Structures are given as structure tokens and as C-alpha cells.
Image 1 (cartoon, rainbow, N blue to C red):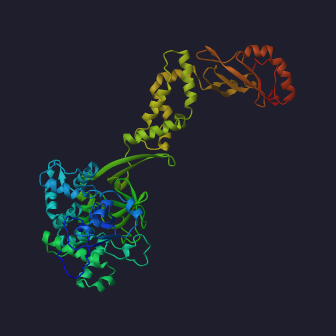
Image 2: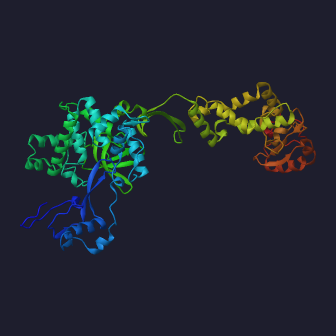
Length: 575
């Protein structure tokens, strides 16, 4: 700071951008860079990023060279680069994560602060949401856990890990873990972040943090020798920064126990990252499903290659996806233990078109991630409803063979006897829905006897009347019978061989004799030679001519002159 006779070179960070004047400075070399406080977007932990300074900052730096005499400034970047820079620096309150600030305010009992420059509303909301997830605050303010976290003076994620670790007796190891989190990754191999390094890093472990902890402890046993750290594969500068942070945290936490419970330590890590839980989509795969619905990919440099469940401790956005650099394994049971309020038990019902059944699954989830799934064999109202919807879409007739024919008969009978209420489409649908109760598949529904259920709704007596007024078949002479067809808008009709009517002088009638059947009279080749509802008139007017043609074509058949008298079908059958 004092003037000297000898020339001096002052190496400075952007702390030089202050109002202090150092006499004798005649030249400034400006790299145009500065370490700027910001935070990791994924974890919210604070970090320093090297960024280009603004034009205002560059001008201020140049001014250092001309405070007491004329001076020169040499900028190590072009004038075009200078002109493209932001006019001013972004205020720090708009750059950093506000979770720690919000926690300190809540712990102090302050909720309404007159900000000199108000922070972004979304940043405050994100900070509040994180603190609530960590159990640090509630509607009344800071909780007991939150006040303990605020005392530690570190980011709330690190603080929550330390509080949980102290409760579980592993605070000493957790201090190192918390310090490691502040440095992102001390492993040299991880600096090339997404190269395929499986061959170099073949070990599989439960946690990248534990792997770093083991390497750090090995460096500590070597008294942090630079050569030893390089041999271990550690970044010397980052490792020493972790050691300083670890020592500081140990003084605050004041816990001297030795780490001997890995599960307790990993559970403590989970306590600090309740919103970063991930589940591997397939065994051995790097694809992950994240809590909340997103997906991610685990970096090749991670040693967590087998664990099905983990916490995504550090990650970065890559295009539309998330790449997880540092992960730490967990057990699903820990989620139930730490966050019971986030556990949701539900039953999911889905229709399987291939199996033609409703599959019901009992599911336990944490923020959308399935912890446990098991098929449910118990039928329920929801299952019955899903089956009914699928059955209606398929068509009621699929499950009631002969339904259309019986409904047509019932409607014909209702036209004869007004006391009969023929089932409507709504009645049929209601019967189908009722038949679905207690069932889960089309196979069960087909065996349910849906047509019998529909008939039961009409009543036994009315069904007997339907059978009488609208018989299903017509009994002919000689014991043969023919089906009677009932169609909407048409009179009932039947079809069979002309010879089956030999011996009948009048048209058969149904509906208590009120309606004459339309008869389709077949030749021996099953083609109709006449369609009539007046059999008597047919015998008189048309049969003689038709008889001659039939006798010529079908000589083996019997074609009597008087068809009103019974006669055998074939000539050889005459007695």
C-alpha cells in the first residue's frame, strides 16, 4: 500500500475495484475476468465462477492507472469484446441462492424486510420451498431443526446433512462430506466430466461422496503431500480447500466421534437432498427417473453403477436432459423413515386390451417414484367401473350370445301385449354394468349369464308370455322345426323347405294367432321359390305351376297334387 523506490507489480482480484487509492500505480493490465459469486443451479450451493467483467467494471479498473498521475491500461481483449459486454454487473442478490439468507431471517424472527434492492420473487419462493422440504421452516417460522441449521452458517443443504449426521452419530465424517459438497468434486478424473472412464474407474461403490471421502482421508494420512494427492488422483488446490472448510465445520459442530456407520452417513446425505431422489430405470443402466417426473443420465465417471436408488447430489442441465455427476446410494426404506408425509399409497387401475382384463396395482410412491408395487387381487368399485367401460366399448352383444334375437322377440311380444315392457338399450347397459360388479375380466363376464340377468329384470311371468307370443321356432309336421326371425320394421318370418308345409292348409300364425308368419319356401337346393304370408292362396294359385318345374328338376322328390295333405318328401318313401 505504501510508496516504494523500487518498481512493484501488484497482483489483484476484483477487490481492487474499490475506492482505495494506491499511490504510484501508472499501469494496469486488465484480463477482463473476475471470480463472481453465484450458485450451482442443481444444488443451490454457492460457488465462484470466472466470468467476463462488465464495461463499468473495466472502466473502473482502467481508472486505477490514472489516480495520481497519467497512466496506461492494457486490456487483454479486443475493443469489440469490450463493446459487447454488459453495461453493469448483475447485483449479487439476483445471482445467488437465497436459501441461506431466508433461513437466517426466519431464525431471527424477521419475515418482512425492507430490501435495499428486492430479490426476484421466484428466487425467494424457491428458497422457501427448499427450506420447507428440509424441515427448516414451517408456518410459524424457523423450526428447531432450522434454528440448529442457521447456527452452522453454511448452505441449508449442508447444514441439514450436519444436523442429521450429529443425531445419528456420524458428524465428524459429515463435516468432510459437507466440505466436499462445497468443492463439487476433488477427483482429477472427474474434471473431464462425461468421458467414458469405466476402464480407468472400474470400482463400483455406493456413493461418489464416500469414494471422495476415502480419497480425502488417504490424503490426510499422507499429511496432504502434493505428490501423494496427485498419486491418489486428487486436485491439490480443491483438496486443500476442502481441508480448510472441514476444519472450520469441525470447530462449529464440536463432535469428535469416528465414522463407522456408512448407512447413517448416506441417510444424512439424503436428509439434505429430499428433492433430488432418483431411481435407476433398469439394472445396470445409466438412465434415471427423478423425483417430480423428470429423467436424467448418470455420468460414466460416477462410481455408483449398481445402486437402484440414489440421491443426485450434483448435476447439470444438458440440452433437454439432466446429467448427474455425483450420486449417493440410498434405500427406499429411508424415504419412509425421513419423509413419511411425502409417501403416497394408491391403487392404479388399468385396462389390458391384450389380456382383456383390468389390472389393479397397489403402489407406494415418493414424489412420483414407485417404492413398491404389487398386484391387487381384490375386486373394487374402481375395477368394476373400468371393466364396464371396456365392455361397453367392446359391445354388449359380445357377452350375451342371442341377445339381439331375444330382444327382437320381446319387442314383438310387447307390440301384442302392452303389459310387457321390452328392455331398452339403457336397461341392457345397466344389466351389463351390474354384471361387472365383482369381476375383472371379459372371460368372467362371458360366464356371468348376462342374457339371463336381462331376462330376470323383465320377470319370469313376462318372459313366459314372451315365449308364448313370440316363439323362437316354428314346429312343423313330422317333427321338424324352423327358426322364426324377428326384425325391426318387418313382420316375423321363417324359411325352410316347401315340402315341410305339406299337410298345412293355412299360414302358421304367432302372437296368439294375431300375426301370420311370412314363409320363405325353399326348393331342395335351399333357394326360395316363393315368399308368402298366404299359404292357402299359394297352394291354389301358384303351386300347380311351380310343381311341374320342381318335378322336372327333382324327380326323386315327392310333389303331390294336393299339398294340403301330408306327404313324404321323397318318392321312394311312399307306401
